[in-house]
Length: 501
Image: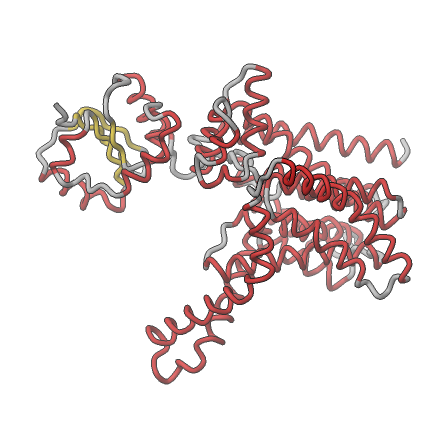
């Protein structure tokens, strides 16, 4: 069997295994992630209008993902949850195939392709969000596909690959605005590659921007004809480029001042900015290592030190450019917001993981002389990767059961309160008004007995660490519970009859 057929077999096999993994992980999911409520309700609101859907909740302001859920749901007559699952499974499969295809563009060694398949299918953090209803799945898929096409362009310099690259990042931008950063800056970065002839750089800049230029002209004409100025998300890019650094510096100075005053004291206050920046950098580095997993981080470092990938300059330049832009995006977000969700780092993680198959290949080539490094690396890799595939930890199924009980046993006209958003969602009492209700309920002190006169049913979520405190408060109200739901950690949902009417 020739190498082309084997490579295709690897891609097809990885696609099938990815779909199976998605089914397994989805079947183990207890409840929706909180952002998923927004996307599903936004899809439901598409029956009214796109504008209504995009203004329903914070995450839906970029509505393309919700539109896809709505179209798929109405086309094949399935629930919005099922439509989201099918979309996410497809996008994740596309990410997996693209990852392996990138490896096949970097090397003609078949074994490295098989290692790539193992690495991406068992990528810990990537698998841990497979069941999340989030638009990131679409972004990651087309983001990785853009790397496929830009690598093909650097190898063949044909305009069709440049146009395909632009198209992929435009689709990625429809899922997450970060796609526009790559679309805007990658051609500029290639233009600065002094190791390439100036003619090659100018041609690459022109080819990579030609589709963007046409789309911008068409978009400008459409906005002018329709007298529309609703381009708020695109304005975010302009704001970040023009004002982002000044905002970051101001935030860092304010946080450093607080650190100096509250922790370092008079003696260390003059070093507070340096200490704070070092702390952020360490925090950022630890998050990256946690995202790729410790064993993968070691393998990546090994591949870099040993130059195991043996990349050509154009290829290396492309991959490091993607790493650079990802690092700027994520570190800027951290500096502005002082937090960093693990999934925000996944675009960076997926590029870093490209070196792991080469590290494994390097280790197996030394297997006859040194068996232990390869065996240890594979063993630790499997141990660190298996966690998302096995249902473990604390179950949240009781939340879904409590919501379902409320949906079944309370009339539609009943007024319901809960301090848990998922209970409100699964109760099916609030329709598209759920987000306004959630915001209103955040302001309510339900332990004020006068509040109970406004509701027919009250479902109180009690985490185990607050069990004694909250139960004591509830006892003072002298209210008798009618239903209890709990998990093995002793987190509870207690449903009470309210005093309305």
